Structure formats: C-alpha cells, structure tokens
Image (tube, rainbow, N blue to C red):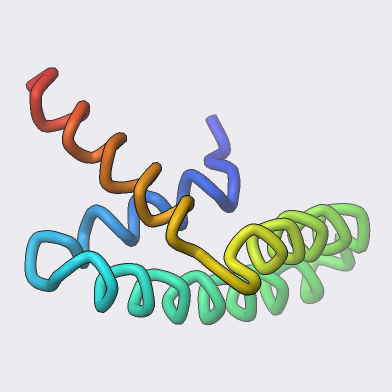
Length: 89
C-alpha cells in the first residue's frame, strides 16, 4: 500500500514529536517532507514516470496551501491524531 504524501508528513511529525515540542516538530516534519519530495521526484524521474511526479507535486502543493498563512489548524489536527493513536495502543 502506498502512503499518501500527507500520511508521510504525519508520520514524520509523529517521529519528531517524541523529541520536540509541537512547533519544532511541525517545522522539522515540513522540512523532512520537502527533502522527501525531492528524493522521490529524482527516483521517479530516473524511471521516466511523469504521471507520478505530477501527482506528487500536486500533493506537495496542497500541503503547502494547507500550511500557508497559519498552520495552527493543521498542527492541532496532527496533535489530536497523535493523541488518539497513542490512546488506541
């Protein structure tokens, strides 16, 4: 099963959250997802897979728009999902 870019972003946030506060974890996860996009784009380019590159860029732009002027709502959502995940364990 392929993970969406947003799912990858959330996973990075969860990983960073264990060591940092909400704001720093979010910043680190956003930076990590940016590097992830570059890496995956390079892999897809080597395969000549333009369709998947276009999809990846669309998803990344959506994340960029969602984190635009105020990313507080997204941080809150990530934090709530993390809390729910921990409680379900």
